[in-house]
Length: 96
Image (cartoon, rainbow, N blue to C red; front, side, top):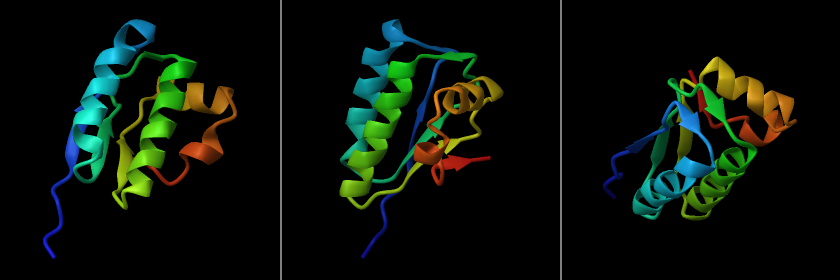
């Protein structure tokens, strides 16, 4: 069996309601096709809705037996996750 190549979706500096549609579309394009990496090193601000969308995408990837990773989450993103009490839900997908 040939393993599929990981595809990367980069998050913008500001991940808010205005950017969610584009991010969702980017994730939908790759999530059914193989492992996904989300580049989060440049995130300066992230909305609660965006974090829940990432958790939903991770669940979809898991149901499809694909890996879902958040690469190099910025300090702002990590702080938002912790502030909202979502550290447990994101545990295991955060990769430095």
